[in-house]
Each structure stands twice: as C-alpha cells, then as structure tokens.
Image 1 (cartoon, rainbow, N blue to C red):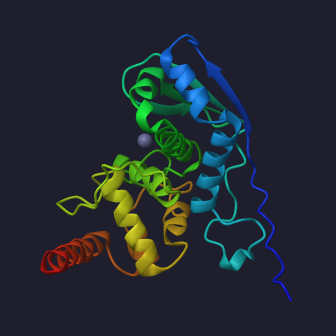
Image 2: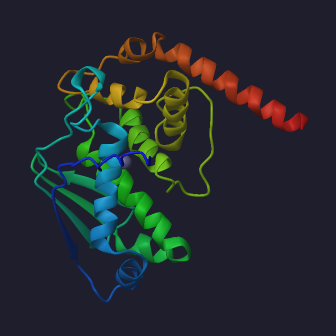
Length: 235
Ligand SMILES: [Zn+2]
C-alpha cells in the first residue's frame, strides 16, 4: 500500500505585495524575467517557517517552536535604486524588504538564484526571534544565511571557515549552525531560535540546547574543518 502523503503544513503566510519604484531600471526587467514575484516571496516565507518552526500538526511536546509568527500581516517587497544589496525593516505587523535594483542588474548572470537567495535571507529577518533585539548581529545574520544555505540558494563564493569568532555572521555562522544541526539532530537550530523568543540574549542557549558551551562547540567545529582539510590534502 502506498504511504499516506503527509499534508503540507498550513503556515500563516502574510499578505504579500510588491512595489517597483522604477520600472525602466534594467534591474526591474531582470527581476521580472527571472522570477515570478508571488512564487518567489511565498517560497522565501515557507522556507523561513520550515527551517525555524515546527508545524502546528506536530505534538507540542515534540515541537521546539510550534508557533510561527502570526503577527506579520503584510510583507512588502520594494525594488528601488539604492546602494548595497537589501535589508528588512518595518514594525511587528507590517514588514518591508528593500532590494536594490542596481544590485539585481549586476547579478544578471545568475539572477534567479541570487534573487531567491537574497529574498530568503531578508524574509528570515522578518520572522526569526531576536531576543528582544539583544541577540548578537552575527547570530541573526548567521540564522538568515543558514536558511538560505538549507534551501540551496547559497552563492558560489561561500566557504566554510573557522577562525576566532563563531558569531562572525553570514556564511561563517551559517555553516557552523548547519554543522550543529547535523551533529545534534534535526531541530537544533529551531530550538536555538525558540530560545531567542521574548527573553534577553544569553549565550547559555547553546549549552542548554546541545550540552556544550558555544566556545567549546566552535573549537570542535574548527578542529573538524582542519581535519577535513588535511584529509582532502592527503587524497
Ligand atoms: Zn541580514
């Protein structure tokens, strides 16, 4: 007998909207040719829920963070002329993602992949917990890039790196989080995110989740990277 298909969780996707401030900008046509705006934004929202929260259908005692953020009613993507790449802003109920048309124009060679990657990163900022704004920026950026990594929209220049700081942010922290998820089991990053909900940041969330303090985890991770690097050199 064929297994019963598992129904897709019904995530609380907010109303999605798009504003393009300069339709004549080359980045605008590259964007519209590369992605379907509704599908791209929806996928970014679903990715944020999937990797940071547990669907309501999972029994509460098994869920790390069963309730994604229902508070966000609208998510607006604004494509405009601006320096840099993108940022997320807005209040509790209404979020905005500002995305640079100039940057999109420069990414023409791999527009679809890069647009989806940036949208995923910024959308995570709209839904992740941030320890009442006291979470280190490196962890906030690391979680956003962790979701980008898990959805396969990581850019080709990303590399796993060790070094002094586990919270250097972006892909450095993202790969560290992915390693924690692999080593300590599915839901580890969900649990870390859940421990940033409504309380000030405390680095002991890593020990509470994995049994080890973050400095120790980072040392084990760096040793693992070194070992893997020397094995690759031997091969
Ligand atoms: Zn960011």
